[in-house]
Image (cartoon, rainbow, N blue to C red; front, side, top):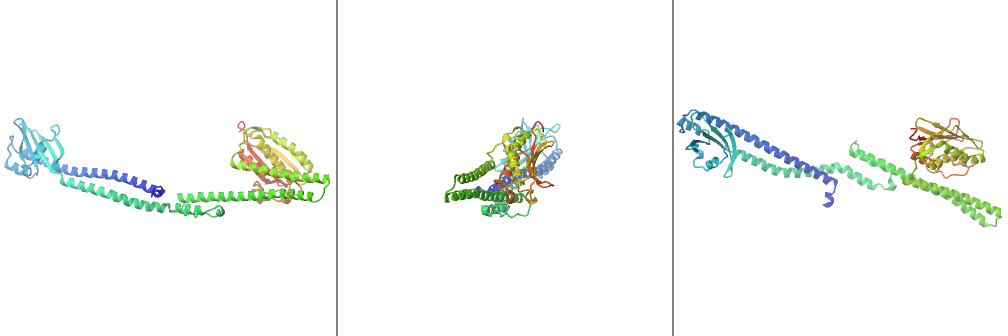
Length: 470
């Protein structure tokens, strides 16, 4: 039971019933008030008409308190009527309808508040459990004594009608609430049934079945938008799991190759005696592979920290031209060793807001990538450009370029277009461009790859200018 009361279905139904009960109480109160007012108004109109008739009858008599037979007959036809006149200094009843003879009701009428200031006053009183309505008329005819006329009407029909209405209301409200609760519970169950199915199907989707999607209800309502949102989330999870699997497989592959090389080198060296020169060469080979593993581990650690959000960029004014100049100078010996020419266009000394260390990493990775994929005798071109809102660094090469279908994936981790392109170069980790793309994105910039019409690839870094230039 406790579990049911905590469900959204029960809470929706409960709130619906509470609101309905409040509305029914207000509506019932207003309805009873209007009914009572309407019945009393009809009753009062009839009493007022009888009062006007009584005044006409009394106007036909003389100044005394005796009534003619005609008047008595006419007054008797009016129903319950009593008349008092001021005699010997106080009001005495001089006429009573036959229905009021020997009735204690006259004492109750006499005890009503004096309404002499009101020409026609309507009062309600209770006598022996019965409700009565009385019209009090004060008459001051010229040359005659002051008299008071009481026109009475029992409110039995009105009271009975109101009692029946109240009884019906107090019986129908609980029944209506019960029916509404059951109906609301059923309707809310039907309305929330798609949510229950979504919960059930979502529980069935595990890490190994992320290719499944929730069925769309076919209606663009809240449930439909929820299904679309969950399907998009599952799609992102699927892509993240696939990327993690590829990342793990690629990292394992990248580590397996240098470890196998180290193992083979050690085994070959231990099989037979080696000269000092051969041992030195073997150790150098092992050292190169260890450096490769270390570089891979550092890059993996960097990307892991980036994914976890623990890498923070320090935004300071930075001269991007100084970074380009420093990195080109650092890469010149490697380019000359591999027979490449590095051409640098005009540098633009404008400041941007960024982390100088990470921007050095971006330019270094782009230059290293261009040198790696440019054949001997080729060129690496470095240029800068300025737009009204940004500064650009453009690194191009005269290599074989990038297949069009691979331009969007070139920044994926461990992605290589064609391993044969680097057969004459030192192999990399396949993480340089991924790191560069992440750093540029953290600086609110963009990194784009394209092919040059004359052959080769171009990488364009676009970074927003500093606040002083924006």
